[in-house]
Length: 159
Image (cartoon, rainbow, N blue to C red; front, side, top):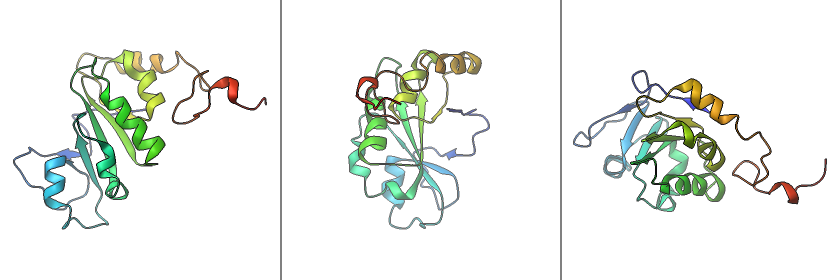
């Protein structure tokens, strides 16, 4: 899991009122992306910030153009972004970075990893050291399936 310092992030998120011109490492809102989709050069890295109310399958055709999909957790108890990440990885086979943003707390890290997130921006006041420790709570090959190993432990072949 990659931990992102929002003050030193290479990805630039512009206010929604600004329409972004093509430049590497722009993180666009869905509204901004829809406004520039047809004119954005294919060789310029772009990311999209999605609210958890969006059906990610509607972006299936655009996914190869995104280097980053940032999914928002408006509250830590609202888990719709877990489902979005799972659909991106398991059904749509998205291979770029899937980042958790918003109200992300340490307790969420094991499930974030299992559902397909590979980067996270922790909420203010959350410590990276605690988050890294939380990732060790459930070892690799956990008994349940996840996006990396979809079969539960009992259904895997004996080694």
